[in-house]
Length: 94
Image 1 (spheres, rainbow, N blue to C red):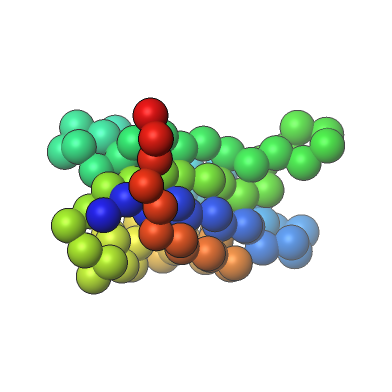
Image 2 (cartoon, rainbow, N blue to C red):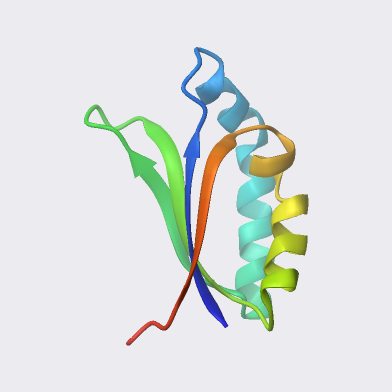
């Protein structure tokens, strides 16, 4: 199953610092996910000034349960970066 994840960071003054503190771990996990064939594409959502305020990710897992298990371990979740997460089943055309 394919899923689209749209996740917004917190809006408090420490939000960007939390993101930057775990970003390298998050990227390393994304590379691992890509190598396993689960990550289709992903990247940061930017505000008008170009600051990172969230993420959008397209992933493929056997089930929603597998997706949830991955999310529970992702540094942006465990590091309290993503505070508003929406997950939608999708079928990408390309």
